[in-house]
Length: 396
Ligand code: NDP
Ligand code: 2IT
Image 1 (tube, rainbow, N blue to C red):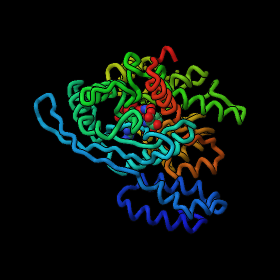
Image 2: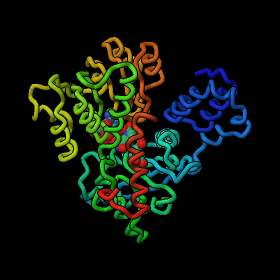
Image 3: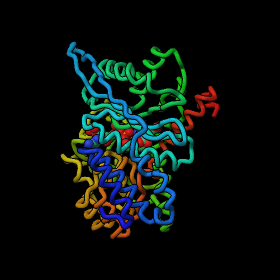
C-alpha cells in the first residue's frame, strides 16, 4: 500500500520493521493509515505530537506461561497474552481468545482494532486483547477449568475493574468467563466487575450473549435502509457457528431474512429452507459438537468440507462471523458475481484488503467490524457500569 502522505509511508515501514513476522498487525495498522491519508494533511498537529507513533505501540504487553494438567495427568504448557494497547479514554477493555492460532501478532491486531471500536461506542473504555494458544476443542469441562484457573493465576495481578476488564472472544464464552471469575475471586477476595460476559446470577448483563450478533444485524439494517433495502426476504450467508454467528442468524431471521448457510472450521452447511438456529444452538452451545451434525436434524440440508466454499453460495447479504481474513479477493469476486449487495462484518477483520477493494469496485455496501460488531463491547461497558453501581441486570 502506498499512501499519498509520505509520513504514513515512512511510519508504516517502521511499524513493519519493529514488529517482524506479524502480518495481521501490519494489516490492521495499514487499514487505519489508509483511512487517515486524507485527514493528516489537514491536521499537521497530529504528526507534530507523534499521535500515530504512540498509538501503534502497545502501552504494555504481558506474556506468561500457562501450565495445566489434563485428565490423564499429563502436563501441558501454553502461552498466555494480554496486550494493554491504549488507555487514553478508559480502562483497558477487550476479549480473550483461546485458539491454537494465537500468537503476539494476532493479539496486537485485535487490541489495536479494539481501541477504535471502543472509542466509536462513545463509552469510556480503552483497547486491549488477550488470550492463549490453548485449543479448547475436545477438552473436558475439568480440563477447561484447570486451564482457566492457571491462566488467571498469572493474569489476575495485571487486571482490575478500573484497570483492565477482559471478556470473551473465540473459544471463550460464559463457561470460561465463569471459571476465570471464580479464580480471580479466590486469589483477590474481590467480587467486582473485573470480567464481562458473566452469568446473570453473578453480575452479568442481560443480552450480553446476544449483543454482538444482534448488534451486527441492527447496524446492517440501518445500512440497508440507506439504499431502501432490508433483511426482509433477503438470502443471507453467515459464516461461523459460534456466539456471534448464532445470534446474527437469530436476529436476521427475526427480521425476515432466510439464512441459508453456516460453517465451522471444518466445513459448511447449506439449507435452502433456512438454517434452523435452534438446531445449531443445540449442536454448538449444548453439545459442543461439529456443524456437520446439522444433517442429523435436517437430513435434506447439505454439508461440504472446507470453509471458503460458503462464499460461493448465492446470497444478497454476507455476514462473516468466524475469523480474520476469511473473505479473500477470490471469495469477494464470487460474492459480487452472485449479486451480493451487502457485506457486514461480525468477526474482526474478516475481509482482506483485496476483498474490500472488490466490494468498492462493485458498489457492495460494506460495514467494517470496528463499527458493525461493537454491540458486544458496548453491552460489556453497560455490565461494567452495573457492576460499579452494584446493581443487577434486572434492575437496570
Ligand atoms: P466462537 O468461538 O463462539 O465461534 C467462532 C466460530 O468461528 C466457530 O464456528 C469456529 O469454528 C469458527 N472459526 C474460528 N476460527 C476459525 C478459523 N481459523 N477458520 C474457520 N473458522 C473458524 O467465537 P465468537 O463467535 O465469539 O467470535 C467470532 C468472531 O467474532 C471473532 O472474529 C471475534 O473476534 C469476533 N467478535 C466476537 C465478539 C464477542 O462478543 N464474542 C465481539 C466482537 C467480535 P470451530 O468451532 O470449528 O473452531
Ligand atoms: O472483539 C470484541 O469486541 C470482543 N471480543 C468483545 C470485547 C468485550 O470486552 O466485550
